[in-house]
Image 1: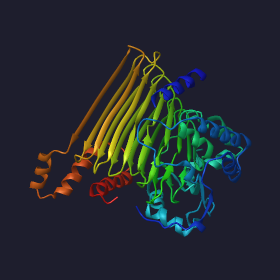
Image 2: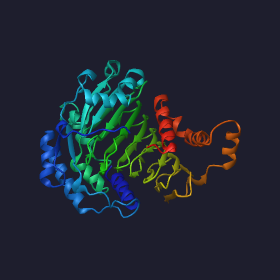
Image 3: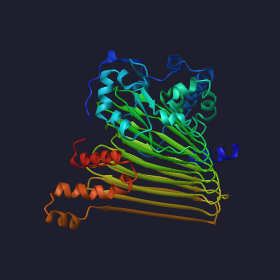
Image 4: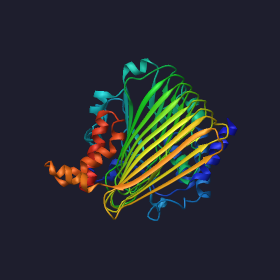
Length: 471
């Protein structure tokens, strides 16, 4: 285990709207900045156990020793000293929707949270700024032994606290990069999920994250453990209103897929365009286990997002399907990482990116196949669509292959909308605007078809809004 983790660490080191008028009286906010005193204050506010307090302060030391990445989008406008690292709505977490304060309830109702829960979810959690305000799991799911609770609740519980301590920030360590260290120091909120051996959930679980306070950061931690032979679909949704100040999202997602288990992790991110989205996601997949990543990235000013799969067991599998839409003023640097550390492992990366109005879309990936990963297969396909001459699209793949006994392929394609296709659709009575939207929606179809119906509709609506330039 130690050698395996060291190897993964080495690989990672080498690779690297609706409006809301904020009322300060509705929040408890720890002052901006990042000092040992502020981190200790956050820990005190949380009522952390002693080991977590020490972990936070050690992470802060590591944060101060690391540099901001020199590659990728520019961070000149992001000043951590101006970011409030903890903002708590003046309400407690509730298991009953009717107990959630009306203003927060109205926000989530506009996002369709309670309606989605009634129709198609086995459980749902909703985070507002730095705290969970609502969490609920269906009775029949709980009876199967499935645990779905707020991360902080799990941390402090006698039953699940030891498991949290065992797994917390072992896949994503504070030494991985500067923003992982920041997360380790100031994390707040998030979800904990445990699916027992052999349990297959018929409906997804969902967490929704809303960052509503201006000039603030959100640092939720998601920890999911899918035990042997179990099956789970987890959906993550993210949004924020638009402000003139920079906001920061630096959450962390750690996924553990045990022997013969399956996990699908779907994400729709619709951040506002003042957001720096620096999320870190990683999965460890054991023998015969499999993970599917489905990702839709919209909004945000800057994004760094590369979900990673560490395939540590024989015949482990990972599949990543993602789409990115970069509009005016956006620089979205996204992709995936696949690390093959065992024989007969399989990975597939399929990405689509769209850029419009001068937006910049960067596809960045890493595929590592270790010398012990004989018989492994890896395939990478990335396609980019530029909608005007001002936009930019770059493909930056990296591969390190340490065995001859493997099958690896990569293809990339960058293009524009065909004038012939536009002409054909317009000749059938369709307006030019609608014709372009139809072609872009068709381009995004491989991603939308992998989502539940409600979320596919949401993604297609977001694409149409981006095409109209209304976001």
